[in-house]
Length: 74
Image (cartoon, rainbow, N blue to C red):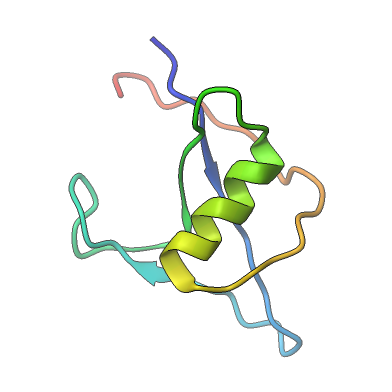
């Protein structure tokens, strides 16, 4: 079963990339871009905004999709 997820590439005016330290398994203790699962009925853009807000407290403007990936076995 496919589980749709999103990740946000957020850069500031100096070109620095926003990363978060994961607080839960399976990536506990690892650095990552903010993101997570898309809720039922939620668009990708809404999911990205929600995940960034939940994980960082920041409100972001969503741009174009940068890419997609499928991870086998997850």
